[in-house]
Image 1 (cartoon, rainbow, N blue to C red):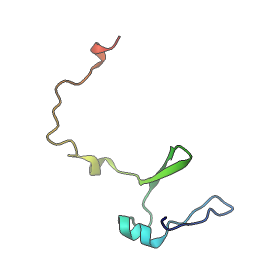
Image 2 (tube, rainbow, N blue to C red):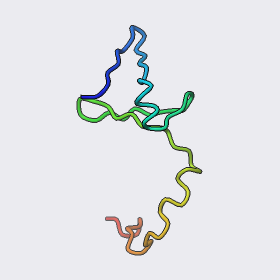
Image 3 (cartoon, helix red, strand yellow):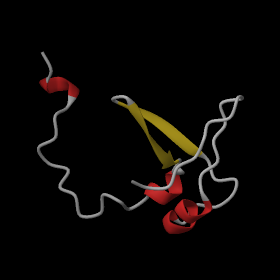
Image 4 (cartoon, rainbow, N blue to C red):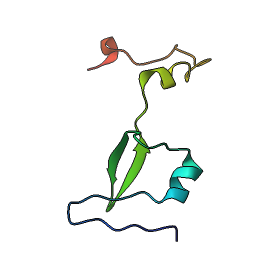
Length: 70
């Protein structure tokens, strides 16, 4: 199992330094909690500029548009 941390009485949790260093997370970075089953996935919040170009080379043909719906 990995590194652990405790939830404080104010429902705060500190992410261990080695985890942040391994993932390249910086102090002040925003994160999102995504519920998943009985757990949660913690991910950095991405800004729109970091998403630019991620679908480069994708084929826009064959997508389902509103006209195709019932």
